[in-house]
Structures are given as C-alpha cells and as structure tokens.
Length: 310
Image (cartoon, rainbow, N blue to C red; front, side, top):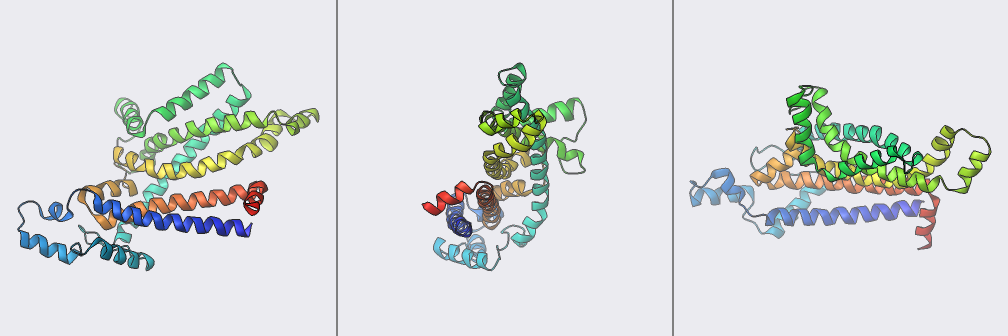
C-alpha cells in the first residue's frame, strides 16, 4: 500500500508541474496586451514602455517563467497587475464562496442521485426506471449556462422565491447549487443504477436472500457498499468538473467566487491572477483524484496487487 501511495503522489507532482508550465505558456500566448487594457489607446509609447518595465513584462518568457517558479516555490504568487494587491489575498477572499458552492452542489447531487439510482435499479425496465433515466439524460444534456437562466426565470422572476444573483444569504445559494448539482446528480444516478444492477446478480446477494435478510439490509449493507467503488472514482472526477463548471455558474449568478475572479482577470489580461486561479483549480483537481485513487485502493485490494505485480 505504501508503494502504491508513493507512486500516485509522484505522478501527481509530475502532472502539477506540467500544468504549471502549460498554464503559464498559454496565458502569455493569449492575444491582447495588459498594458493596452490598463492605460488605454491614448497612452504614449513612453508611458507604455515604462509600465511594461515596472511590471517585468519586458523580460523574455523564459525569465518570467523562472521568476514565476521562484515565487511559486516560496508560496509567493506575485501581485495583481491592476489592483497591485497580493494574488494570495485576492484568492483568499474568493475561495470561500467557491468552496461553499461546491459543497452545496455535492449535497444536492447526493440527495438526488442516490434515491434515483437505487430506485431505478430496483425497478428495472419499469416506468419509474424510465422516468429516472430520462431525468438524468436531461441533466447531462442541458449545460450550466442554459440551466442557470432557466432556473432564474422560473424561481426568481416568475415565482420570486430566490434572489436573481449575488451572495446575500442562504437562499441565494439554492439556485447556483441546483445548477451545478443537477448535472452531477444525473451522471451519478446512472452510475449507481448500472453498478447496482451488476451487483444484484452476484452469488452472495442470492445467498443473502436465501438467508432471509430483508431487502433493505441486502441493498444497504451488501449491494450498495460494493456498488460504490466505481461511484467513488466518478465522484472524485466530478469534483474537479464542479470547480470548472463553477466558473460559468458563478458568472451567471454573479457569485463572488474563484470562477468569477478568473473570468474578470482574463478580461483584464491580469496574468498573475489568472495563473494562480487556474493553477489552484488544476492542483485541487489532481489532489482530489489522487486521494480518490488511494481511497479506491484501500477499498479494493485488487488495485494494490495489480500495481505491485506491474
């Protein structure tokens, strides 16, 4: 198990270093000049050059990347080109709302996916099964940038139940969480259904039925526990997707989180802030997936054995 954890951690470090390089290069290759955005078209060439030198943008990409790595190893993400504030300060102010939205979306997804997936598996080929899978198909097919406005039109404009946008109280969290959580619930419910259908035909399930165990106990103690293995992997992958999807959802609902900060920084060509935001999202994605792999290996010893043999 120790060797497996070390190998996964080593792979995670390699991926993160690759992400650091790719993000830095892609951000600097995006068309547009931050100096033009900051000073406008009326600025003189001397003013532009002076600002470029003061920000270090006159250096080569290699020099800028080297300085970026130096700061990164010292946990210094630099300063915003526009506000001049430390990037860590800007991210610290925005990461809380994003975590709040992500956790709320996960809660919505779990509350919807597990009942739907279990009922659909137990009522295979029935009307209930068809209705549950139709819902999941709609959840997958409707993107966040469409689901969000639809929920706003229905629950905010027409019914007036929830705020249209912003982050004021708990009610303002409902619609963004539904937007993100519905898509995840659709995917999870289908995975839970398919996993349960495979498990319900196993010999030990038939043995449990022959012993006279209740259906509830068979499902919760025997079937669902083993069916969760592929579901855990999917949840780990989808948490990263939630962070990526939060970028769009936060813009739709004017949610003051990391996604909104990323879009605003891209529009301003604020390189240090964009790099830090994308790096944080990517690193979180890699870390969560690494922890998921380790958890999967702890639950299923065959994973550890196959790694050891290989």
